[in-house]
Length: 64
Image 1: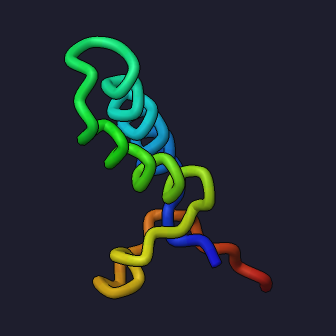
Image 2: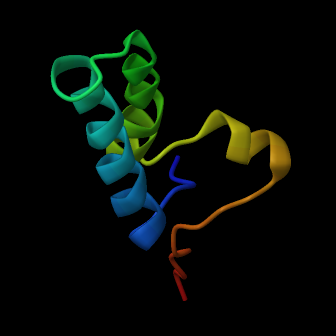
Protein backbone atom coordinates (compact mmCIF):
# COMPACT_ATOMS: atom_id res chain seq x y z
CA UNK A 1 0.00 0.00 0.00
CA UNK A 2 1.37 3.38 -1.00
CA UNK A 3 0.18 6.68 0.45
CA UNK A 4 3.35 8.81 0.09
CA UNK A 5 4.54 9.80 -3.33
CA UNK A 6 6.38 12.28 -5.51
CA UNK A 7 7.79 15.42 -3.97
CA UNK A 8 6.46 14.41 -0.55
CA UNK A 9 8.63 11.30 -0.63
CA UNK A 10 11.76 13.16 -1.74
CA UNK A 11 11.31 15.82 0.94
CA UNK A 12 10.85 13.18 3.65
CA UNK A 13 14.09 11.44 2.64
CA UNK A 14 16.05 14.72 2.52
CA UNK A 15 14.69 15.95 5.86
CA UNK A 16 15.31 12.54 7.44
CA UNK A 17 18.92 12.44 6.28
CA UNK A 18 19.48 16.05 7.37
CA UNK A 19 18.14 15.35 10.87
CA UNK A 20 20.17 12.15 11.22
CA UNK A 21 23.30 14.05 10.17
CA UNK A 22 22.83 16.26 13.25
CA UNK A 23 23.81 13.26 15.36
CA UNK A 24 27.23 13.06 13.73
CA UNK A 25 28.11 16.62 12.69
CA UNK A 26 27.13 20.10 13.76
CA UNK A 27 25.56 20.41 17.19
CA UNK A 28 25.59 16.58 17.64
CA UNK A 29 22.18 16.38 19.28
CA UNK A 30 20.42 13.12 20.10
CA UNK A 31 17.15 14.54 18.73
CA UNK A 32 18.59 13.99 15.26
CA UNK A 33 17.46 10.37 15.50
CA UNK A 34 13.91 11.65 15.01
CA UNK A 35 14.97 11.84 11.35
CA UNK A 36 14.62 8.06 11.13
CA UNK A 37 10.82 8.46 10.99
CA UNK A 38 10.59 10.65 7.86
CA UNK A 39 13.43 8.69 6.26
CA UNK A 40 11.63 5.36 6.68
CA UNK A 41 8.23 6.73 5.64
CA UNK A 42 9.86 8.15 2.52
CA UNK A 43 11.70 4.93 1.67
CA UNK A 44 8.70 2.65 2.25
CA UNK A 45 6.17 5.08 0.67
CA UNK A 46 3.85 4.57 3.64
CA UNK A 47 2.92 6.92 6.47
CA UNK A 48 0.67 5.62 9.27
CA UNK A 49 -0.44 9.18 10.12
CA UNK A 50 -1.61 9.69 6.52
CA UNK A 51 -3.74 6.56 6.83
CA UNK A 52 -5.40 7.87 9.98
CA UNK A 53 -6.04 11.26 8.37
CA UNK A 54 -7.15 9.84 5.01
CA UNK A 55 -4.37 11.59 3.08
CA UNK A 56 -2.76 10.07 0.00
CA UNK A 57 -0.09 11.84 -2.06
CA UNK A 58 0.94 9.01 -4.37
CA UNK A 59 -0.75 8.80 -7.77
CA UNK A 60 -3.57 6.31 -8.13
CA UNK A 61 -3.34 3.72 -10.85
CA UNK A 62 -6.38 3.32 -13.04
CA UNK A 63 -6.98 -0.12 -14.48
CA UNK A 64 -9.46 0.56 -17.27
